Length: 394
Image (tube, rainbow, N blue to C red):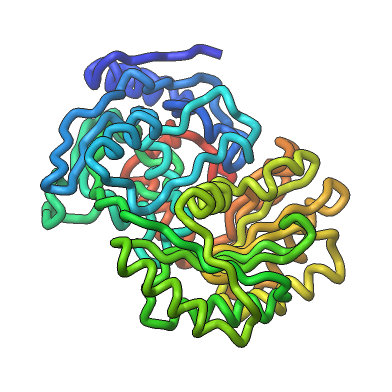
């Protein structure tokens, strides 16, 4: 396997054009922490774009940061910390989950996979913070879209198209993102001992209140030190947070006595939820990520528990279900998706054999699959980038 490491855009274009002429696909990596996501690749060569790194422009007053796509998230977060700002979409660090601890997650990788953590319920997904890009398509052509300002209209919103494409459309070289101020204080209202249905009811009540929650998650007893824990996060200026946390605790009194966790405990707890840490240590199990209506979560979990040995937790107020199932059961994608009905089930971690044998991403309806194929044809007609990562391709 050849590894190509372009140092600038002109070298990148030459490499892609050579691969295009030979019709030899390339595995596109930057930090490499997400190589285990998606289907096993059909690529004989690696294109390492790690040289496209470093913060190019950061204007705290304008709430905009521009950096090379391969810039490690740790470097981005350190720069933002200095100005008391943050990536509001809260991208997770899945190295522990995917068993790839030696590689650094990058800003471009988070955007390409459209990753967002617990704050998504309030701040939206990664694509909602993706302002601009520079990239090279699978045709070997450089292009750019968007810009360095929040209000920017330059034609089609290609940023949203690239977000969630898993590197199958283009090689990102530079990205611009919106950033926001970090909250002064964080409090977590924790309820204990609730079953799934009661937990979803409590989270729904909290999210529908006027207290502006930025996180709502539930850990069942078997992964929460023996006692189920339902958590609701409040962030903002200190006086506001104190008042809202107290009012929310009182409003949820019918669900039992709640504790209010302070800054340090809250930050640790929500970082673990963001990184899927409650399931990361179950190395022998396959991990599924399921998006669904919160009201449907209790019935789905009950139905699956009759057929599968589940470990799970809920995020996004019940709208995101993380499942871990043992090897003897991890191929039951049809069962999981049939029980789900409307929603999306994605296989996040499994053996290469399983990821090659079943659809990793939710199968698309015929019309949507046709649209996806036309988009792919426009950017990468020869399937040069990450061939087969999302769906099997010839």
